[in-house]
Length: 511
Ligand SMILES: [Zn+2]
Image 1 (cartoon, rainbow, N blue to C red):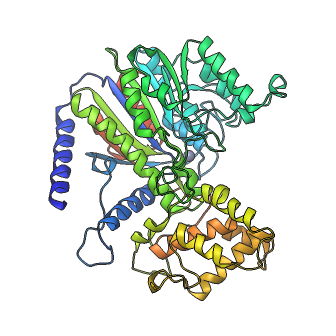
Image 2: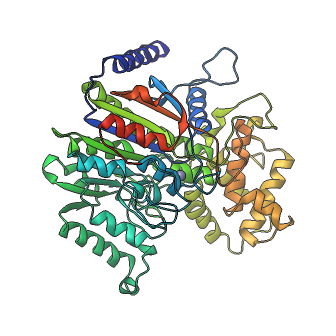
Image 3: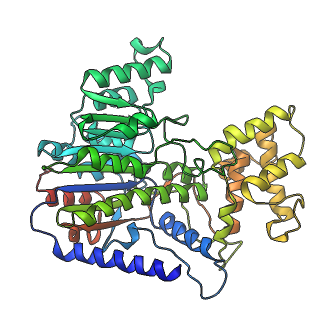
C-alpha cells in the first residue's frame, strides 16, 4: 500500500518536473485557476495531517505525519499577501477582485474601483475577448463574491439580484455549482414572488439568452459538447443556495441524508473540460467556497472534507494537463485564511491526535438543522441539563463521551469539558447563560453555541485550534504547474496573480 503510494507520488513529481521544463513558448491554451475560499497553509496542512492519521495513529513515533495533497505536489510554489485596499484583513470580494482583475479594491466591492464607480476588467473577460471559452464554477451560490468578481461589476457584493442578471446576460460559456440567492432579490417587481417563481425567472432568462439550464443529475450527466452555453445548478442546495458540505454528502452522515445524486466539484470541473475544450482554448475558475464557511464556524473536519473535494477537482485538471502538457497552466491558491486556524493547542501542547477528527460524522449546519431540530421536537420542553439522549447524539456525531456510555476511556470528556458543553446546551436550548455577553461572543460567535462548542472541543482534542470566527491576514500559498508556471515563484501581492496569468495568456489587464 505504502509502496504503491510512493510510486504514484514519484510519478506525479516526474510529470510535474516535465511540465516545468518542457513548456512551449506559446501562451497556454488551457488555463485553470482554483481558489480555495478561506484556505491558507493551516487548512492545507491540517488536511494533510488528517489524511496521514487515517493511515495510522499519528502519535506513534516514526510514522508518516502528512499525506500531501495534489496541489502541494505542484513544482512551483509562491506566497501571496491578501490585504484589501482599505483593510489589512481582507474579504472575499476585495481578495477575489485582486485575483481576477489584478487591482486592489475596498471590502465588499465586486470588480470595481474602491469607490465602486469604475469597473475593472477581469482575466476571464479578457480570455473571452481573446476567443477562449470561459467557465466559472463554485460550490457556493454562483452569484457569491468569489465567482462574481470574474463576470460582474457591482459596488456591493450583496447586490445579488444585479449580480445574478449580469451572469444571465454574460457571454461566458459555462457556469456550474451552486444556485442563485433569489431570496435576496430586492426590487419591487419580485416582491410578491416566491423563491420558486424567482428561480423560474432565472431559468427563463437563461434560456432566452441562449443558455442550456439544468438542475438535475440526469440533465447534468447528459450535457455534452453540443449543449452550447450552460448553466448547471446542483440538484441539492443548502439555505444559502450552495452545494451541501462534502462531509454531509457521505453515506454515513449522522443526519441520515446522503444527498444522493449531488454533484461534486470534481464532476463540475470534469464537465467543464468536456464543454469548454476547443481549438482556441479555455479559462476555467473553480472555487471551493465552503472551506471558508466551515472555518468561519470553526469546524475543522468539515473544512478538511471540503478541501479534499477541492483537491479532487484539482486532480481532474492535473489529469487533463498530463494529456496536454505543453499548453496547460494550472494555478491553485486561496483568497485569504479564515478562522485563525492553527496546528497546535495549549491543552495538547506538542501532541496531535488528528485521528479523532474522523469521529465527526456531520457538519455543523446539518447537525443544527437536522439532528438538533429532531432532538428539540422530541424533547419539548428541553431538559434542564444534558440528558442521556443528547449525550448519545454527541457520542454518535462527534465521538465524545460525556456520560460513560462506552467502556473506552479515550473518548471520555473531562469534568471541565463537560461543563463547557453544559453551558452551551443551556444557551442553545434555553437562551440562558452565566457568562458575560462578551465571553459568550468569544466562545460562540454568532453560531449555535452547542455545535460550535462541540467542534471546538473535538478540534482541540485533536491538537488544532482557532483564534477567530472571521478571516485573518496570514499569507496564502500559491501552487502552479505547467506552461508559464515558473513566474508564480516568490512572495508577492495577491494582485500579482491576475497579472502573471494575463502575461502568461498574452492579454493585458491595463494599469
Ligand atoms: Zn473568501
